[in-house]
Image (cartoon, rainbow, N blue to C red; front, top):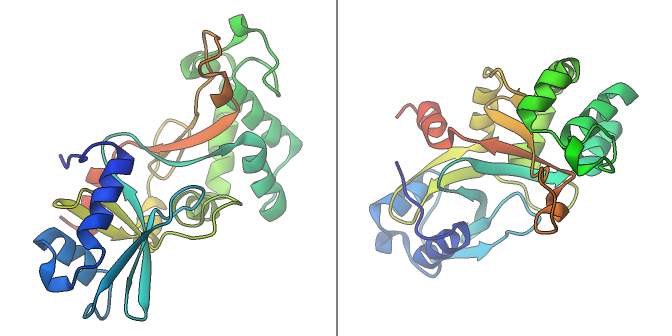
Amino acid sequence: MIDCLGTGIENEKQIRNALNGKEYDELNANLQKLISGSFLNYAGIIVCDEQAGTNKSDIIITIGNESHTYSIKCGSSNSVHQEKIEDFIEFFELNHSITDQQKNELRLFIWGDKTLDGTGLIDDRLTVYQFKEIYSNAFENIYNFFKTVKEPLIRRLLINGGALSDSHAEFVYYGNSTDGICCNTEDILQWMMNKEKKAITVGNFTFQAWNRNINGGDKSEHKRGDIQFKWASIEKDLKDIRGE
């Protein structure tokens, strides 16, 4: 398994530092593979800038007149997308057909307290397993709804990001500065189109609430009401896509 070098932020910084201001011949074998797999022409000084925050891409690499963007991942159970439930619903309202029932089932699942707006009692907050048992029809309906918007939804989660993202991701790079694997996001999207799991998934991305704060308390209360998609098998999947 490929290891992170510190936290995700620290890992990204080490990758940037290993690339920025260097020429191709100065890079280690791993980063040479990253550049040669992304660029048509890699002669000249490499410029690597941060693009994190609300952007889907974390870094942009430029050599001469050519630039490419990358989402950097490492470790296990990576989050690929997160946003407020109402922003997520608005995406469907503006771009796709979604019924009031489907919108409310999404709200019900994310808040997980038997309400549509998070105002339920702490004692009514449910784990995902409890929700699936009590609201099995809603659970199944969300899964089926996602199948009808699979391609544009994966594109939002993986490539374009939410409404506040100003930069899409052309590539996903999983790893650190000395060991990693890089895939074109369009290749990942096409591979994901043929994948399904038993949970509420889109491809191999699992849909969940960021944090229902089941037991209450102030520490995680602000995390309620956010949707999140996780990619637990990212390293294995990227290797499969690349045939490694």
